[in-house]
Image (spheres, rainbow, N blue to C red):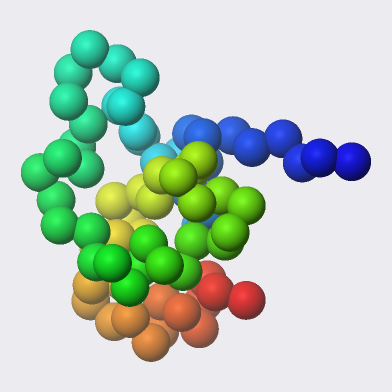
Amino acid sequence: MKTQINDKICPFCKGQNECMAHSESPCWCMDLKIPAELTELVPVDLKRKSCICISCVNSFKEDPETFKANFVH
């Protein structure tokens, strides 16, 4: 059975990612540097299918090791 992917849910915290990729306005992520190390941590089945929320991006930037301990399993 294939799991349904919700592209509006952050792959880490499972909260709303506030992605605006499908809107007429540019997404908030266009003005933000998202670390490559963080995007590499996205589960394989969600890569390029689900956006990381700004809260998780900021948490990772503040303390990558704590972020990994809390969200990467």
